[in-house]
Image (cartoon, rainbow, N blue to C red; front, side):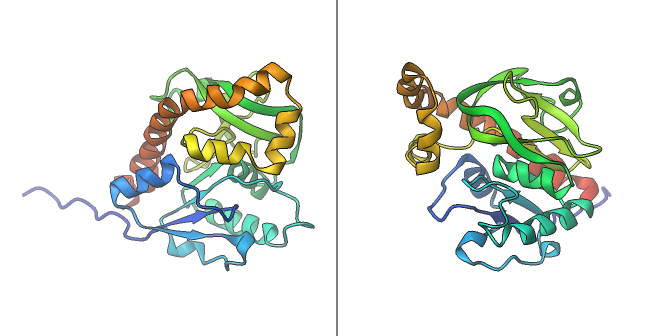
Length: 250
């Protein structure tokens, strides 16, 4: 008689949103396709941060605020504490853009303004440490991703760099084997990318680009979204299978 397979963790994922508008994206689609429950919390709207121990993992999405702008956003310090406590206890984490910066800051790494805004389709290259990573090991060696930021971060102590771009060295990293930070965006569909590009803060970043580059940005992003969202779901799916719900965690 074969031994019984360990039961999958029945707890939901905690999804930390940072903008009030609906944010349909590839990560949400992958959760829905797999039938994985998720509880969505929006601290900027006044939602209370729950106990991280009630969740199988945490997904932290992007937003226009800086990761350490505590004077403007009075919930940021509490969110960083939640992230620090959770990941230090081994809770799987998937942070995107602001979510990656929050992970770095929660692990005592500096977050700072980068040399120039990175806006548009960035060329992302995997680093040597990605080769044996359970999430990034099967990813293309080079791919294009939507970039929309002007902040960056140093790697936390003990982190492994997984991806870089020419402009920003730290594009993806993993800490503790289960906490991932991605500075770039693969997840937005065409309507969401258009929505982000129209937001005031990001419109200011666009004005810093040369005219021709700014004019073709929306066209380039729209043309690339189908390929990017497929890769987003592949990476996120591997994180779910091999990290969050890995048999040894059952």
